[in-house]
Image (cartoon, rainbow over all chains, first blue to last red; front, side, top):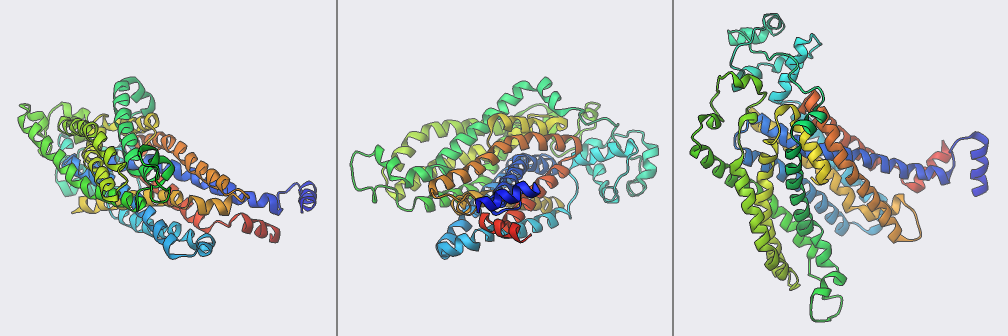
Length: 394
Length: 109
């Protein structure tokens, strides 16, 4: 066979032989996987920004945590479906076709998501970008024009900017509002968001990446890799005084406990986000400045022309208080939780993990609100992207 | 109401992206056996995990690339690209011929 391959290879200069073409499948797999990594890199940060901008910064804790929870739910479902297939199928069936099922099933779910997405409006920031492209006389898709009335509803654009020539292009909008149309001056987006962030907000990059790495370290060590620790007798038995048999040494049902705890986390997220919203509302109320109060009421000031989105002038100190509290809780809870886990009793171990779930849910649910408020609209996405690059977690 | 639909759609998409990403990790050993043939099964798992790790190396890079797109061309565009980059490869991985089958297919071609 090797001779045959060599013959074909040298003859045609082509890679048409079994030994090499088999490798093609492997290489394709790696390449496809790399693309997936690229996709997952921007998706969660993008979803935070998209969601919080779309809700105009109201109840940031709740909406941010809902987004984060959906990510965790997706991961949990992926692991759950793998578990079900492993239990239900024979090893032969699993390796023959079983592993393909969740990949193809995920596509169906994705199509539903794309279809839903096609029915909704642009984010407010996107509308501004579209406006800019209208003014720089670039072609605008008809779909964008349909949606452009969202601009008027936005509280920040209540002041009038002379845009008579654009008005003719936005005929529909001018008629429907019956007043001079609001359009932002062009060049509102950053020319180079990457340099902008590095130059103007370096300290924020560090803050954001530290917050992201705190989440990554604690979440992965206590709720993801913990299942390996709990199920591997070589790891967990080191921490026990008894030298019992390897079989009954590991925690029973470690994988299921981890799955259940991840589900608890998903359920806890929205409530933890509501706690953050409550604290933030208290902070806003206490603050004497009505400027910070204006999460719902439009403020027609000169300054607001410099801002692209309501989020740009919101503070997030309430969410920060909750996150700081959560970090302290994590530190306090860590020792008892680990002591519970190394008792090797399933219930005790679950309880230990549950302690982490509460502390981490408080932190993670309010993190999106914190992260999103750290950069202005023009560089928000890039700033969080670089923060992620430095933290290298979700 | 519109906001609710909108957030729903984002939530579905994020969930799906994570789902697709996690499935690979959960089937690392099975996929390893199919695509990294070797007499040593531990080596297969290692190779498959290295693919998983490669995706993790690509993740932070993806954050910056998508960030650039999101700030320059809009959030919606960035999320559209992100979901396409997840769905299409996921579908293709589901259809990919395995190491052995690819060999036969190429011989027939």
